[in-house]
Image (cartoon, rainbow, N blue to C red; front, side):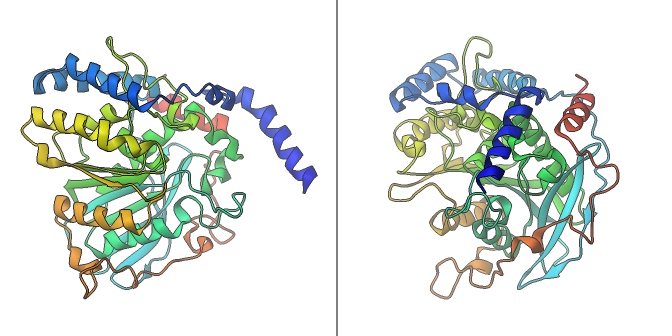
Length: 409
C-alpha cells in the first residue's frame, strides 16, 4: 500500500508541471482566496459606493461577465459543437425516473451524469442543474462511495426535485467520478483549467437539458453546495437562461474557494478598477430569485452580517428585495443535508412552480422516504458493457487542446 501511495505521489509530481492551464496546488498555500469577515464587508461597502443604482450595477454586471469569461478562457463566440447525447436504460422509481447519461461538451470530452425526470406528465417541466461539490466519504476519501454525484444527499435532492415536477441533472466535475476515465488522473482537478471547463460544462449541461422533450426554457434553476455552489454562481452570472440560483454553503465575501478549480484563475481580480468576490458574483443574477443557504461552521457564517445585507441593497436597486432570501443555520455544518434541502425545496417550488406536496408528508414536513438510493455502480454511464466511445479523449492534454479549439484560443 505504501509503495502504491508513493507511486501516486511521484506521478502527480511528474504531471503537474505539464498540465497546461494548471495552477500548482502550492499556490493555494498562500491563501490568497481567504480574508477576514471584516475585510470582506469593507470590500462590499466599497463596491456599493461604486454603483449606487440599478443602471450602474447593470453596467458592472456586463463588465464582470466579460472579465470572468475572459479569465476562464470562455469566448462569447465559442462554437456549440454537437452534444451527441448518450442515454442508458431508464429505471422507473416511485414518482420519478433515473437515467445515466453523457454528452460531449467539446469534441471528444464526455460529461457524465444522472438524469432524473418526473414519472408522469408531458410538461413542459422546469429544469434544474445540480453540480456537486468537494464532498468525500469521511471514513475513506480514496474511494468513490458517497463521493461527488454518487452521494446520498445528491440523490435525495435530484430525485426529490424530479418528484416535485422538474427535469434534473447532476454531473461529474472535471477529473472526478467517471471524468477520470478521460483525464487519467484526479490530480487534474486541482488546476485552473478545471474552473474553465467546469463552467463550460455547466453551460453545455443546460444546453443538454433544454434540448430534452418537455423542457421549459423559461423555468431554469441551478443549485449546488460548496464547490457546487461556486459552479452555481458562475453559471448564473454568465448565462441569462438561469432564472433562479441557490448556492449552498459557499457564498461569502471573505472566501473565494480553496481549490484551484475555483480560485486558480484570476476571476476575482480587478475588473475595470474593482476586484470582485463571490457575494458580488452571486448578485449578478439580480433581480431574478436568489437564495443563500449558510451555516455557522464554515466561512458562510459571514452571510447574515455582511453578505445578505449587501445583496438586499443590490436587489433594492430594482425594487425586488423580496426576490433574495437567506437561510442561516448557525448550528449546522458544511453539507447539503436535510436541514438545507428542506428550505431549498420550498424556495424552488415557489420560484419554479413545483409541486411541494409531492415531497411532503402527512405531518407537513419534508418526506424523502420514497426515494431510492442507488449504489454508485448503478450510476455509471461507462463500464464493461458500455465502454467509452472510440472518439473519447484519453488524456488531459487532448481535452485542453479541444477546449481551446472550441473557444478559438
